[in-house]
Length: 160
Image (cartoon, rainbow, N blue to C red; front, side):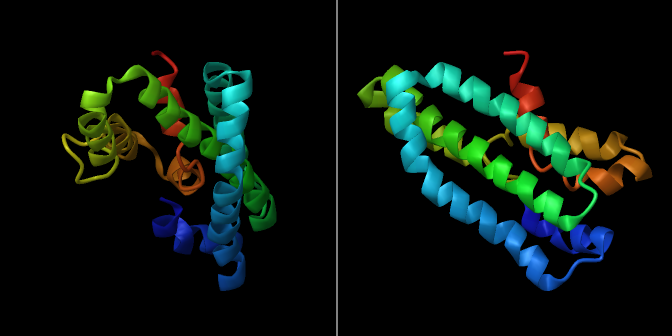
C-alpha cells in the first residue's frame, strides 16, 4: 500500500531513493521474522488479547507515522506497523481456522482474500472507507494521509 505513495512521501521529506527503499525493506524484514513468533505467542497467551493489543499498537504507530518529522522517524514507525500487523495477520487466520468448519474453510479464506483489494469481490470495507476518506479530506490533511498507511482499518474494526 505504501509503494504507491513512496514518491510523495520522499518528496515531503526531501529524502533519497535509498531512504525510500528502507521504508519497504524494513517492513518486509519485520513481517517475515515476526509472523512465526507471533503465532507461537498467540498459542500461549491467547489470540484475542494479542490481536486487540496489536490493533491498538497499529493505530498508535500509524498516527506517529502520519506526524513523523523526518523520514527516519517514519521508518521507525513503519517498523512498528509491521510488528503490529504481523501479529494480527498470523493470529487472525489461526482464529478463522478454529472457528470455521473444515468443510467451509476454503470458501471462507477465498472470500477474505478476494475482498482484500480494489478489485476484490464486492470491494472490502477498507477500500470503501478509503474512497470516502479521499473524497472528504482537505489539501492539508491529504499531505499527511499518505503516511497513515492503514489506520482506517483499525477505525473500521473498532466499532465491531
